[in-house]
Image (cartoon, rainbow, N blue to C red; front, side):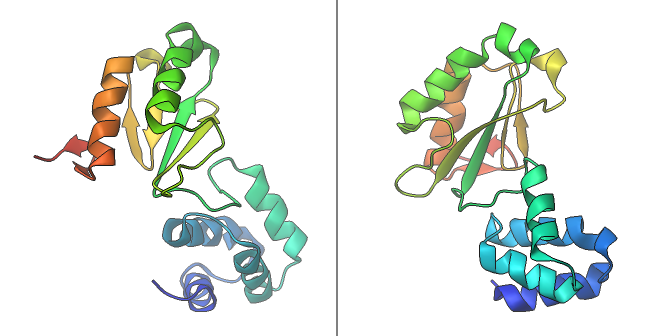
Length: 163
């Protein structure tokens, strides 16, 4: 992994140093670091020559740009009315029970962070969740246990179990 200062400089070189390129630079930092530290936001502001408050304001506006350290696997549970009506609470309880964490927490080993988020765009296949970039739909507590067991054993590649 590159140091933050080098990463931010490379991202600014790639995307440009105009204010309109702030979001892809933030996303690039999150892709490598899994969150935006205070230091990374200061470096981005310095590199783009914009106020840190503008970087922070943008970072905190978007729900997929985390400003605190996250687990290796970030689980986002859709909390829309459709998912709620189709069993989102049971899904959340199954995850909390299996991982021994609540929404907003990270497991002690740093492997999982559990979050609720607004619409993931899969209402027609509710309830839905996202683990990092993999979408899981039509969830049941049984499916949750199977999916998480794969992640617990690090036997997931591209959303598929690997034997």
